[in-house]
Image (cartoon, rainbow, N blue to C red):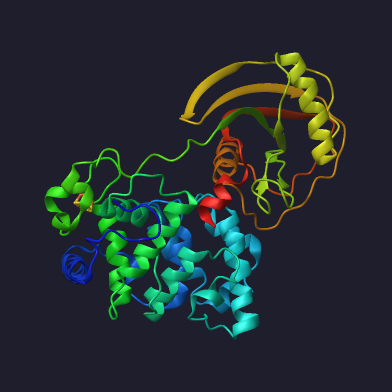
Length: 396
Ligand code: SF4
């Protein structure tokens, strides 16, 4: 069993040779036909790697095609308006990736004349590119002898080595990066690294690894020991905190009020309904809190007439549920932000689209110089990761 940064004795020259041969042969036959595999262009490799972080392959496919159509080169992406980049990212989630992608494109143009650097150290200086992504670009686009380690290969290497500790801890990471380096062949780095990820994704699956069809089954220590269920060891569970927040839909003349999320907020740069955590309970208290917080966020001072209030619950996802209530207010005034082309979160877009269909309205440029507005709030109850950095670390 592997313990620290020393590979087990079984991982000798013969093992490595057999592993490389079998893996590459299997990949040549079983690799999926994915749009980002049609070219070794570093821009396309980079784009796909960023999109695939925390996101399923099938979800990424149409986004990748659309994005490439709009921004076929890194120069086009660098010159694009950030709102347009966010708009095309809408629905893919983890929007920080899109903003970093845009910033990195600008840096590639300003510092490298539009050509991606081909070594891991230089790539890691770009926003949003960590050790894994740098290794993927350097190896896949430039055939550099750079190791990679991401979710699929962490699982695969843990099992090949029968590593029983938590592979996400520092000692586990050291060992697995070392293993990823040691197994690299001298040539065919691009298909080899892709084959590692493909095998992890298609065969060495998290819950039910398909050892019966695995090309490296006889080289796998976990298979020999029958420990597939316990390796890799489960990491420490992320702690979640319950929070309740409201998104307030302010409507007038078929238009809805949106605001741009500020730097440092969740969804920074995107347009959203006024949204905030709510602490009160009961419709009257919630109403008062909504009035105060909408005013704080947008400058709108709402009135006090509460005509109607109903609540119902919908299952939204296993982490959130939606309560919908309707409240009527008589507010005075205000000049909210004007918006041109908007990048919005998918949920904001869907809700705004519902109003658009219902009232044939537009979602921008709300005119608030009126004496009465209707206000509706959507209250979300989330189980949110206690440490805000969890997601950022995961996609770094
Ligand atoms: S034999 Fe099973 S556990 Fe080992 S690498 Fe293959 S699929 Fe994974």
